[in-house]
Amino acid sequence: MTLLFCSAHDDAGAWKAELKPRLPDLEVRVWPDVGDPADITYALVWKPPAGMLAGLPNLKVVLSLGAGVEPLLLDPTLPDVPLVRMVSPGLTDDMAGWVVMQVLRWQRKLDAFAEQQRAGVWKQLVHRPAAEVRVGILGLGVLGEAAARALKQLAFDVAGWSRTAKPLDGVETVHGEDGLVALAARSDLLVCLLPLTDATRGILDRKLFATLPPGAVVINAARGGHLVEADLLAALDSGHLAGASLDVFAEEPLPPGHPFWSHPKIHVTPHVAGITHPSQTADHVAESIRRHRAGRPLTNVVDRTRGY
Ligand code: NDP
Ligand code: OXD
Image (tube, rainbow, N blue to C red; front, side):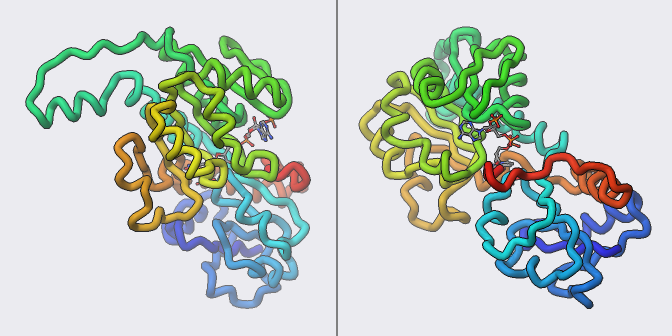
């Protein structure tokens, strides 16, 4: 059985090295050196060229190197085989850490202190205690739940929104359209960890921003397609929003000259919130392959009608 690796973004050598001890009999080929396409049973991919997977006649499982699979679902020729998305402790810990880092940056006034240091100013600015800071999380899946728990651990007042009801210890949870409005109205910081689907595209828009309390901060680590960029700029420039931390963008890399690069209230990171480290995620890939080989049910299979 042969696995085809295809990603311009991930390190093929590192993946081969991690998979070898876990699955010694698995041959790994790296796109575009496919060899005979009929040999390929598994494809481990991030943004493969459209139509590439359709050219593999014996493909049994597509394994996504990313947790979000909307780029794969956009390919109308995507073969009708199980699509397994990335879920792993390393990626989850990364994301929880990135969200906590951004929440703390705003709560603990790090930017103001950086400015003061540049000016040689010693001035203690008082921050609001975590228990009095309300964080709302859109999406309570693997990553949203981990972020909620990490923030809760630091005493933040956390609430979350999901499509279906999801009780979570110590976290106020809501769902549905009314739930979204209620969540936004109580969010000093709003974190987006939703999958990008037809239902969530453009959700971070003028209407939602207007529901946030004045001075709120928007934190997006999900997808650039969730954000209406012009609406964010307008809400920041009007003073209604105090800032934004953005890891994902409609166009990546963020183009030179884009207003986000130089906006004083926007913090940009280059899609690094949750990384698929081979050392931390190869277990997940190997386990999926072992399950498939043994005829056991796969886990983390994408529901294509739901879109995530
Ligand atoms: P999950 O599939 O585990 O969770 C998705 C959550 O979103 C669920 O709680 C789901 O609700 C909720 N949701 C989906 N649609 C809606 C809707 N229409 N209304 C309300 N809630 C909705 O995903 P993950 O947590 O693993 O990942 C989330 C996203 O994070 C990925 O899709 C990806 O885009 C992004 N990501 C970004 C990374 C980065 O580096 N910036 C790294 C990894 C992921 P329900 O529970 O009811 O199904
Ligand atoms: C992912 C990502 O979906 O890296 O895993 O964005």
